[in-house]
Length: 87
Image (cartoon, rainbow, N blue to C red; front, side, top):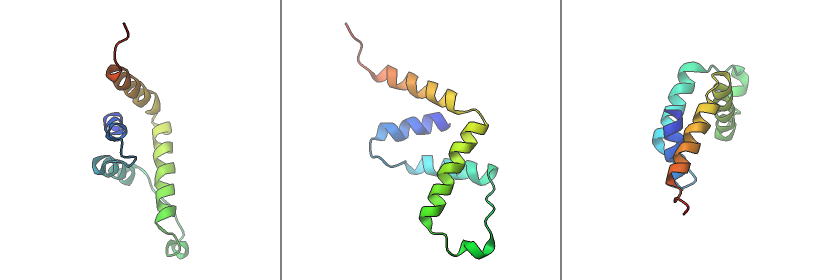
């Protein structure tokens, strides 16, 4: 699912992740990643901090679960299938 949604995100060409990709990533992280932030710091954390934290959590989740190679293989396959054949 990560690979397919990532492919669709790249294919859209808008530079922004589609809502389905963002929702899927948030659901995965919500169910599998726990953030520990001291309560006195919570009020000072803006959306930029949370976006950075979510991005880092996603990268670490993909590494820990060894998902990057299969995602890259899928993206390479899909990208290759869209290229015109050389004569």
